Image (cartoon, rainbow, N blue to C red; front, side, top):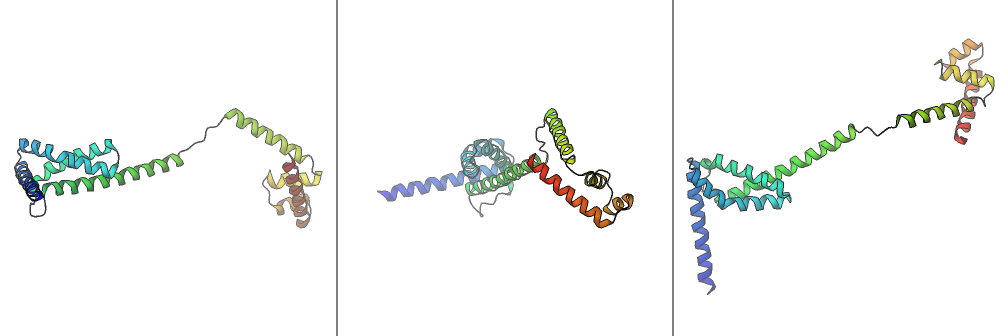
Length: 196
């Protein structure tokens, strides 16, 4: 009993394959009505293939439309010796769906890079100004803990932009003395700022 059923299914597949080959041939000659029938036959297969790859119905629907337009445009180039119409349509659908996955992934990566590059964290000007003012106040208080000689050499080197050698020449001191005062002054500043 299974043999007649199998023969019937095989005959149905062969009959469908012949019908699709006829429809694609006529579509290749510009027969819009034949393409409409072909569309109805292969659209579910194309959509199903695209959905399996994309897992997104919106993208799958777009890919389905693209594939069916490609089939319409290239119907005259279909070679029945190379395979069936359904395998040709499924191959095009799979290729287009994979291309869409790559395209979506590339766009996502570009968007992420652009988002990171262009990210400007929210700032509150009043808070920033207050913080700067407080930091300045703390620094001034810590500078007051230095001896007059340390404060003077640190200010000349860091606020006036002089080199250690220039500070030494202007103060009439040995370079080693200036370096020692600045080193001791910075050490004391660091300790004061850590406490604050």
